Image (cartoon, rainbow, N blue to C red; front, side, top):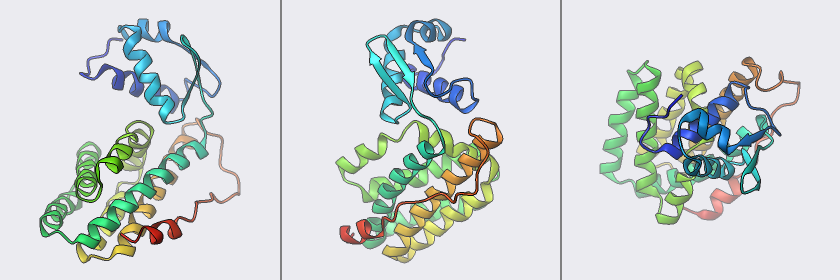
Length: 236
């Protein structure tokens, strides 16, 4: 297998994520840089950079310069990533709703309209990504945008499961965000973003359980952190 993507380190990270999502890689398994480089037909430099990206997502632990291991990977790993991304997205949503910029509302309205008539998962994913980008650019400063960009591995890769398996739910969740943003409802905009990302996480976890990557669900209801006070204190 030879990688063809322009950003080779991102392609390496995506390849390893795919191995995790198919169950070929498991928690505690060693990742050999030389083996991965040989398999993908690249040097060790992009492999090392790809592993650094995954380490940032909490999916890889590096014990030595040439030794790395798959970190604990279970439903709590996925939920925590989405919870953090949801908190940041709620923050940007609240700011955009408070500012009520007509140009931003118009751009989001066009995207909402396109999403309403889209049933192709790939196209839907691209439109949803653009929706989030418009909100983030409008509502986040440089520091917050930098933080949001760190969620470029696990979150979008796992979100694809939700788009593939529960596209109507994803469409409804994005529409709820749009309505709150359009109406300038600060509290609803923040809550809609958080609810949407939690929905996506739940759907992704269910998909990974069906694939046998995670064990079957027990009776315990997943616990989500109460972040309302954090958002209210921000006072967007």
